[in-house]
Length: 417
Image (cartoon, rainbow, N blue to C red; front, side, top):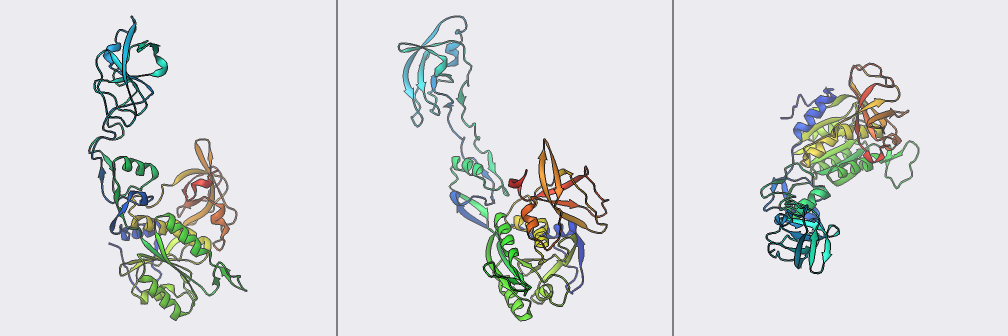
């Protein structure tokens, strides 16, 4: 069960690894629903699926050619073997039967006639009137797709936690799975706080910035399989903030906030959430950036509090909240496995916390290299656009120089150089 050390305004700081563990412990897949296969792309399968029959349940020709009995070609290496062509078979036809010492013209994908066990490609035979001359012996199974070559009856096709990719959907379609039991998508509400933020369509005044965090988090959560059901921008006044948070808590499975997460006079989010019944597992993380990140539960709703600085909010989502969203969707893998890369540059480690830096990962032959971005300021928006991975440096690491091996959590494989 998720730990709830206390609910006052104490620091409640935990290590980065502990924060991840507490968050994943609290995030369990939601209810199961049935959807059509065509509507199941990127959904997560909730029940084991097995093949009701062999896929495909009959042997088929792998080539345009002639179906025959391999035993009838056994003497072709030493003498002339001619087989009479008695018919033709095409994909979609009912299987016919094949008499000994004869052949049937056959198209790719057509079912083998009963008695046939091999196919000779059309380009490998000589034609002599109504006969074909076979130049060499064939073996049973030559140029044949055997029954069940995709899957055997009762073979497992998908397990709970598998994501419906186009390839997996095609296999399930071949198995006749017109509907699938999948985990429900988590409903996510996003509340961005701060008197300084304005909508994207507005022109910021003095001291104001556009709300980039909402766009970033909504995109991340949607890509991870959630339905974003509400996005709210609210100032720092206590009354309106409480009303916005209270309303959001009733509409979602996971509430994500940005801003107001520290301990300043106007940092009201955590204390307001406590007043609404939120019990925090932790209120800050030994992490740079995103130190003020917090996580807890209000009734059935999970709550993730992220800082307002854009780079810190990005790190907080990718390094912490992503695992919660993915687990709620039913995925087995909460976070992608890190890539081991060779550092190009210098990193000053931190004694008491994990240090996460934006970096550009690239392939160097069979290996990876990563270059930290020059400016790691948590207030920047551009770092998340210019980087494709996060360099994760554990606490107590020595200063790292070029050539050191580091772990990188990749968030944009398409941008890999």
